[in-house]
Image (cartoon, rainbow over all chains, first blue to last red; front, side, top):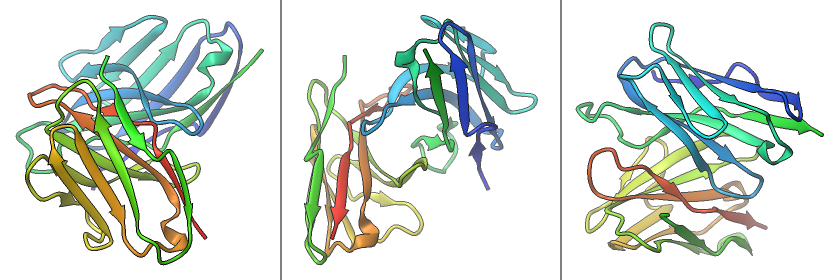
Length: 116
Length: 116
């Protein structure tokens, strides 16, 4: 079956350091990947996405890397700030031609703790 | 930006009560809405996909008679937890998406349901 998992359940970093959160997936039919940030008691907040025809995409202070060969996705946060403390989820979507669900499948999440 | 609103944000009720949760897309028309459930320190699990004007598609293991979903308009979907029991206590999150390929999902801030 399909699974999406994360290597580290909790990541603690110092303020100002760079953070890297990893995600592994198993379904090679996935063609769209998203990173979400979830603060306590709130819904997921979109951070950045990437399609399978790309290897890298950059946003403001964030970079997503996609390695389709090993089915690995990572989120890099530059100059991590206390406000970045939250749980981060990777999520993926299958190709539209797939008769399966078109909703997102979420990974298990990584808690990022930023120490001041 | 696209805003999805959930109401109520928090509800406590007695066992056996039915609870209705509303999900509204405030500034766009959502042809598809999704309902997720999230237990503490766990990821979001898709419960059902709701398309405006048609019956919801439930994920395996989700009781359709227990979790009634109505998507009667392009801006409103409701989830009713019928005869709720303590094991139904969870964080329920909806998301909404515009029609068209490549449209992102926008998430609400969730509803914390506690059944006594």
